[in-house]
Length: 304
Ligand code: GDP
Ligand code: MG
Image (cartoon, rainbow, N blue to C red; front, side):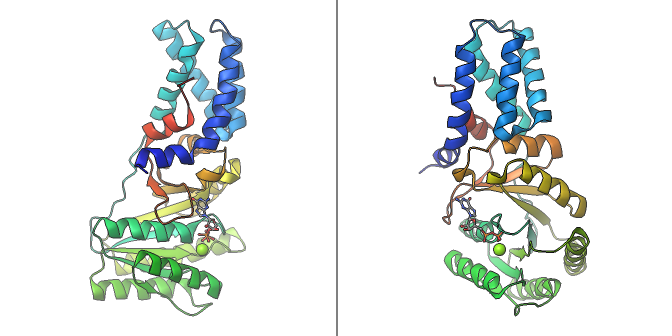
């Protein structure tokens, strides 16, 4: 399956839900008027795009319709697609030019961090990079084992400690091992089970200090993993994490299982953090680089 079709098929539920609603609104109007915009805005809000962003999209839509003198409601979908695409555009590349470079993966429990790391390791390895994983989610032995399974699947080494080890010390050991072996990219898993914000802040700060101290001039990425099925809750999580960590990009997982893909727009527009990858399944190949144009055509069907 090609790149386009993977994203597109991953977005099927979102597309179907949106298309049905958008079509029924558009088909019930013969000309474009204020009522049409209001009904469209309602649909966008309901599809997890969020109030603020839905309002912005409709504002732009009004402006475009006016500027281009558009009269036919059927042309709205193409305009919507354009507006959405422009809104979510951004640089989705990872900065990994130094040897080693570091990717720290953060997010709450269950969003798909460990799975994403496995997929990302396989992807980077296929690009010719040597990857080393650090099992810094030391909260449960099972979490370490799970990353171990992914390390094997991706065919990359992993550094671990025993359950309950200080996560920062696992990060330290992973960096030391990566330096010794000349690895290109270090990817560190983290726990998402910290009881409160202070706890989380302290732990992430400590990990960051170790990375800065050991690799002062290396490229660093901090990827926040969010679960698309949680809709607006994912936006709230992003807001919380933005306060405690310097996030360089977002990975939005489980798009395949939800009609809430519109949440990408809220995340990008309200928080201004680029979405770098999307998860579209549980398999090793189911992580795709985010592409604004593909995404926009994946959620807004202009065929009917
Ligand atoms: P973590 O607690 O953040 O490390 O989350 P895990 O990596 O353990 O993932 C939690 C569950 O989500 C697992 O059952 C994964 O298989 C599943 N998962 C992760 N990413 C995706 C995705 O893109 N699509 C689907 N359908 N499931 C996913
Ligand atoms: Mg995990």
